Image 1 (cartoon, rainbow, N blue to C red):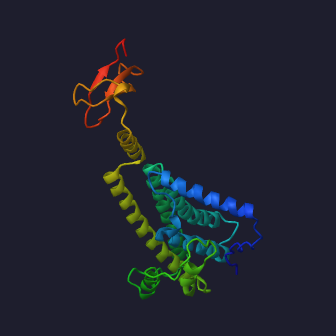
Image 2: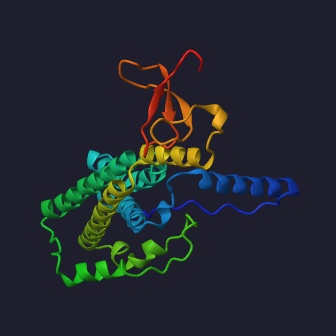
Amino acid sequence: MSNVRNPGRPTGSHRTDRSDQSDRTDRSEEAAHRDRTLRASGGYRKLRSFQVATVIYDATVSFCDRFVDKRSRTHDQMVQAARSGRQNIAEGSRASATSSQTELRLVNVARASLDELLLDYEDFLRQRGLTQWGKDDPRAQAVREVGKRSDRTNRSDQTDRSDWKAYAQWLSQPNLEVIANAIICLIHQANYLLDRQVAGLERQFIDEGGYSERLAAARIEKRREQPPMESQGPVCPVCGKTMALRIARKGKNAGSRFWGCCGYPECRGTRPMETSD
């Protein structure tokens, strides 16, 4: 019987004043980076979907090592599908800072990977004449109940196994039918959470726009906070505000310079460049 191994926690070492100062500098730089970002990113360890996917990954590695031939493609495919589900949730969360579309795509990849893994477990039970628990089976309900509570307090500790321990009564026993069914319940739970996550991301994209739209809005706001002096450009013929030098990006005049109102997008007043300008 093989167990999933976790890397040991590194032992402490003596720190010099210089290393302490370096650590403080790193933390301040990280804080400054967070302040500069337009959209929050990371924080995936706090996502319940990631926490459940981690249990699924660890449980699948253990299950395959115990009950599936390590030389078979099924072993590798199941482990890779479980890993893909977990990794893509994390990568999607990190990508959220610069691309809503990438975040959505990666979360959907995670969902598809777990669907693939679900079929593998269902096939495993069916092909061996074993019973798959129904949705209303008391055993399935007991597994789902665990997801409604959490005994873990330190999400920054990557070696914390309290999520696994919460399901140990099903995942650590010798009965492969019980283990497979418990993992199936966990996959259904993770898929439900990912469906809600995708729906929330889609609503956020509709309400707030993507990264490009937020970047444009931030640039406009910055321009408003620092309006150009009167001497920098002529007066807008539409609203009377100062105009700024622009470059046409498309159309027959692409690349040409012109005067555009600093009140854009509320005011779309423009004026061609003149020789005197």
